[in-house]
Structure formats: C-alpha cells, structure tokens
Image 1 (cartoon, rainbow, N blue to C red):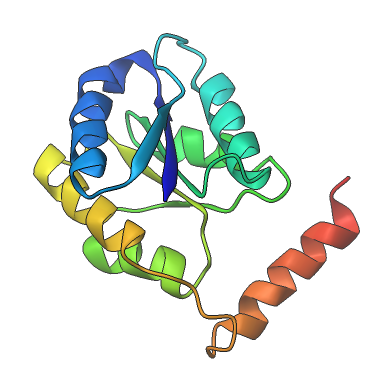
Image 2: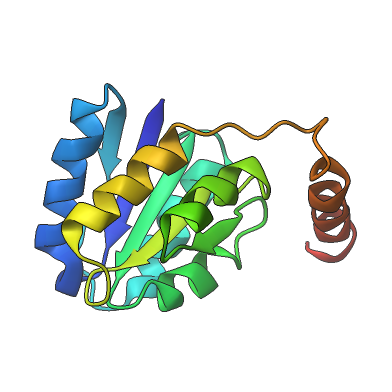
Length: 147
C-alpha cells in the first residue's frame, strides 16, 4: 500500500518517526513535506493525491489533528477521520471507509500514534457490511452537492 503523509512544521519529527514505522510495516510512503506553516496546503495536497488514487491512504498531522482533518475533508473524494484512540483508528476504515486519518502531535504520544497507524493500515472496508449503506449515503451526497 502506498501511504501519503504530510504535516505542519510542528509535527516534523513526529512525521519522521511515523514514516520509519510505516516503512517497517512493509508499506511505501510518499512524504508531502512539513515546511509550510499553513497546514491546509499540505492537507489539501495529500487529500487530492489520495482522492486521485496516487496514494492508497493518507496520514496528516498537526498540533491537534483537527485543522488538517477539516482541510482534507474539503477535497472531493477525501474522507479524513481525526483519531484519538485505537478503536477510532480501526473503525475509521472498517466502518467509515476513511481514506485518510489525522492525528495531533501535541496531544498523542508517538507510540500510541504508531498503534493507531498499525490498526488503520491493517483494516479494510467491506461495502457489504452494515456500514456500507451509511458510507454510500455520504458518497451519494458528495456526488450530488460537491462540484
């Protein structure tokens, strides 16, 4: 799986550790940088690349994970979930077909973040599951209302 990752400058070291961890899991990583203090720019870039299929999944980081989540979700075809526990990291993909997770480097320790990443990347959405119709409703709305 190819994972796109990006962050704001506050999460640079955090991102470097997560890249090494993702590589150790056997995935490919595309680093979209961390030098732009306007976190929306990197969030939108990663989200666009995921939505376009350049990357299979994305991981975005800022201080809280909230700002990059909001920015990424403005991109049609990007479904970003801000995760703060293992269950959310699993369910982001299993129940919600989130193609991006976001985390906060200032609120989530790096070892916990690695657990989130392992669970997220190890999960796959099943459209035939009971969550399928729920996710379909979101996608259908997006197709109708987002240009």
